[in-house]
Amino acid sequence: MPETEPSRGAARAPEPTEGPSLSFDLAQQIGQLRQEHYWQSGRNSKTIVKYPDFRIVLTAIKANTTIHEHHSAGRISVQTVEGRIRMHAGGKEFNLPAGHLLVLDRAMPHDVVAIEDSAFLLTVAWPEGEGH
Image 1 (cartoon, rainbow, N blue to C red):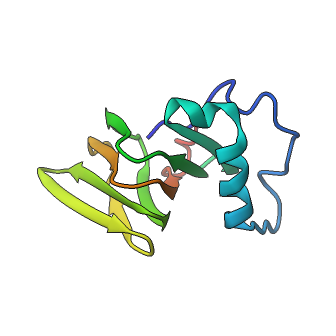
Image 2: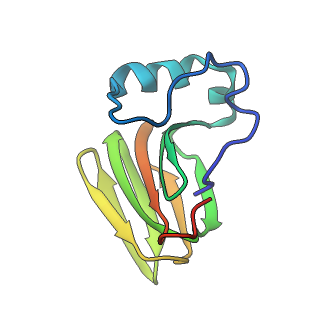
Image 3: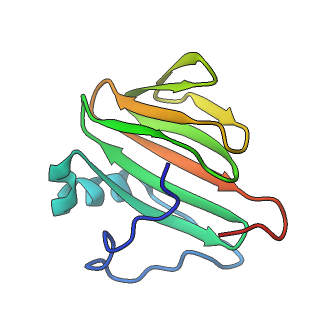
């Protein structure tokens, strides 16, 4: 997953992405992503938490959209919030309906396919001193 979406959020009002505590209404955040014009391209993402060693990105993705194979320098988790996605990683296929979570080790190539309109949280954690 891309760790950042440069320029995609440029039109958004700034929101805090770090601090001693953060709280999110995911349904509201997903609704906002689906209202923005980037949604028309098949997906839209927003970094909701950003620390030097830890990041959470919320992605809304349309049915039949693929995020082609890529990898992250940090360990990742992918939690489906709405819909159903399928991921391929390490020679295996993972079906992730809403409420399911997948964790992948560092640098493991993976892809994402939306089976239906979906939303997921990508969490990336880097070892100390290797943040991005």
